Image 1: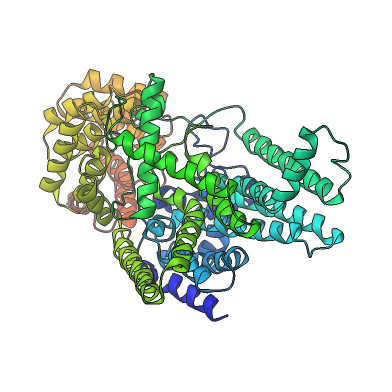
Image 2 (image 1 turned 135 degrees about the vertical axis):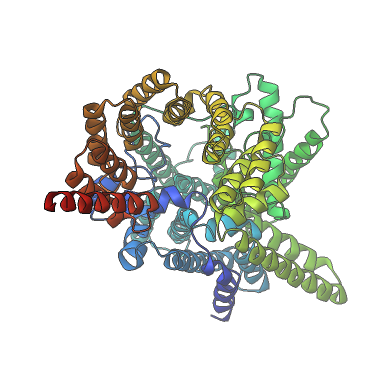
Length: 640
């Protein structure tokens, strides 16, 4: 009980300062812009048919991330209580992390016993710095829920194969373990690997039995399946394999035969045509992930593009680190095979399995993934890592003299304190987008996306010159990174540098992904430069490609007003308002147009509506004064 309280306290204390954070990074799409959180907008049935970001799984642009349990937790544990106040979202994340840590302590006690080593392993997991993205970022809720069901599935399966369990209780527990694995998968796709870890656990527990039967089979002797325990083992393995295949098939069927769309330029290792370059580069990425577990200092929310350069040659020094990682895995596998007893085999084997198996979906071997390195996906594999570290200290402790054992305990305490300090410092980076991207640039200065995103945040906060410097730095690093040209063009447009902005937008439109998005912006620049026919053509093309973008109709209406094509202008303004009833600029522009047409009463109505939407709209205030002055002047004329 004391160990559980210590673990819970440690897991909560290191994340107390994350409660002050707001929404950052992917939180905008998953929380702020996700209609699935709002019962008034989306039914429960719609939520269950949508992806993690609130869009239909059938969409071509869907990322195919199906995590309904995570979205349900946002909807009913947070939005239903506090709507979009970030504190409750962070609080639930921290509490879920605490639950995961206590469950992990329970599993550690099953594997390592009830002593110091179980507590150390659980505390290391509780304070490990690589977990900040999973806990301090609200979107990391998927990892937390997945981990809880993952651990429950393994514990349940442990009791199912425990020698003390009766035959009557074993199969219900196996069934429960499979159901918990399904819940883990519906929290995040990685959760399906709990079935793989249960397979590893079953093989390790029945290791001696399996080997004895294998020796009989190799000698050509009968009676292999006469043993009841062996038959139960085979039945359980078959059941797990069938359940795993069925869950995988069901999950893939939700993609409706399509795959998520990834950007080859951002994930260069996955799309490189040379198989050796892919092998060397992926090995380097795996080594980098292992290094983050050992030393979570270089933490960044994004490692795409050129952040981790590809490995082209076999004699690249980075291949030495990759080889060292693979040799470590061979050593761990050897320790399992050459274990002195079943207890030692179980300890090393299950730790190794919990490190490797949960990482397989993120390795890019079976399926392509939408990232290069993502700290959040290390939340599950770190369970195995923390167990391995504790086992290492346990073995070292057993061979040291007593005086050095005290030094070892001091080292363990130092590691926990250093990890806790790193975690609490990293939590502060997740307070907002601007602090997150700033930290990303400091630790990963070659990351083009960080410079682009940081520039966007700086512009929003009014630090225009700094934003421009980061846009220019991004272009210097990646001349053909088109997203930065779009944002840079918007900055120049706001400053009235129309011709320069048009050049940037034209460059952005070289990207097929940005073509439609940029049309309206470039057309607006042509309109402001007086190139009305080119602007009209682009506005119309934008309407075809993005028919529900109200700003395009508003801008084309303004152009028609400039050309005194008043009827067409009114039609476009009304369409813009119909698409977006709270579109202040459309009401203001329509009111201004109607005044120019001499329709003063109608003009006043639309200008007043614009002021209702935005009481500080200076244009509407000034134009309304003009309308009121005109009405007074007209009344005086009528009196005279």
